[in-house]
Image (cartoon, rainbow, N blue to C red; front, side, top):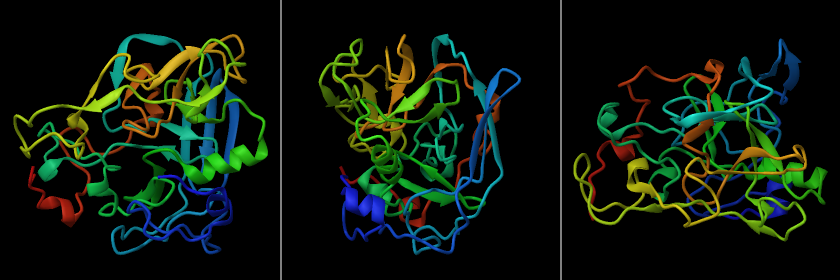
Length: 299
């Protein structure tokens, strides 16, 4: 979904666009707070997870949880290194935005069974309304934590407005310490002066039918409906690439938030700090909206 600059910055209502909730500027929520500093050789981020841009109204008919200020303290390495193999996200925060709001793309499991092997993709059109996702691809959960499932439009426009000539927009940091950027980047990963393009992920919906669980044809409703296809897009299986960035001119591995699945990566290229662990224990699913509890594939 594309959001106009006027809507994202000024909070103009967006009605009936792609199933996403209206954006509103609320004067009732607490002010956004975030502090980043170096502590004992790590980057420490403390925030209240309140966004600094317009967002949806909470509670609402699909998301009954009011947005509440949090006490979040996260740490990540200042000099990240790559792991031998990509590490699965599981139910961790993937990272944190520059405004202190976490990136948390994970969704609940089919029939609330954490061992089912089928996890709902929250940003699939079948699910966005059921989860109360707003135009920042975000919503609240549990104790009122606002978090991003995809590209945060409001934050991106805030940062673009502050640095309109920037070749790349750094949105935050992943739990392993590598930086996260918006989708518009130099087309040549090794040349910051190359023409800007909107980078694409290398994932696609599988062909055929699901062998178990909800059955039916693969259609993107579940995370497991997708597969990585090397060379299909611009990014690797972790939705990232190596190259120079304005903040790291000598080159660094960096993640990119894409318009297509996975949007926020589901694999870490490095080893995540344990401060990003959260969520239910293995096998336990977060709540499933009533609209999805009765999900039966019709394909």
